Structures are given as structure tokens and as C-alpha cells.
Amino acid sequence: MPDSDEFIPTHKSTTLHSKGEPVACIIDQDSQNEPRYNSILNDPSLQVGLIGFLNKHDDLGLLLGFKLKIKTDTEFFEYTVYPDSEFIDTVIFNESIFIINKKLENLCFFKKIITDQFVKTKTEFDKFQKMIS
Image 1 (spheres, rainbow, N blue to C red):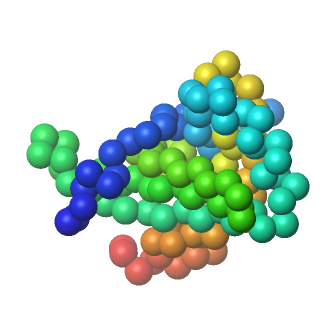
Image 2: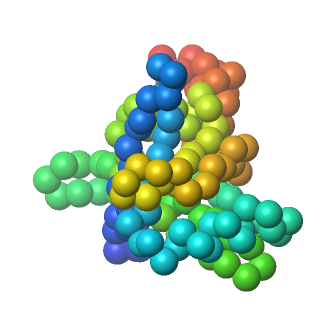
């Protein structure tokens, strides 16, 4: 990867369980962002994209990560995360991500994320599994 510095982690991810179901969450530590989320959720220009990548670490080998980009005409958020496999599976099967604060309170929720380099649905995932086995 030529620009590995571009993919330095900015946020932590976690998988919470709600009613027995895994929920993919990204923790936003910046409390100043909380009021901004209220305005973006009702903005018709809202776009959310998820770009997967592999990054090479000298000791750990290849790491799977992603950039989550949230954009409106007036706001922009960008998160770089190296999640665990449960988080990735949750995004593949549920196609959604929650942004939570450090107290684990929900700030906003994104469903039907536009993805790139990530398998988007369970059907695509099953096809992909057949191709690699």
C-alpha cells in the first residue's frame, strides 16, 4: 500500500449485542461531534460510504481495515478503523453501522451503506465464499 499513513486508525470499533444480535459500532470520542449528528441525519444530501483496504504491518502482517466517510453538503466525518472479524461479519450481514460515544450511547445510525471492496450482502458473501474455496 503506497500511502499507509493515510490509513492510521482514528477511531475504535466494537461489537455490542442488542437482543442477542451483534451490532457494529464505531466509538466517537469527540463530544463536539454530538450536536453535528443531529443536523446531518435530516439532511437530504447525506451520503455514507465504506471503503475497505489491506494495510501491511511489519510485525502483524496484513490488516483488514476500512474508512467510513459521512458527508453532506456542509459536513464531513471520516473514520479509519481496524475492526475485528465479528464487526466485519456484522456489517456484511446487517449492512449497518452505529456511531456511539465513549459512554456507549447512540449518536446516529447508518443503514444501507454504499460499499467498495467490501462484500455488501449475505448473498454476495456466499458467492465470494464459493469462489475462494
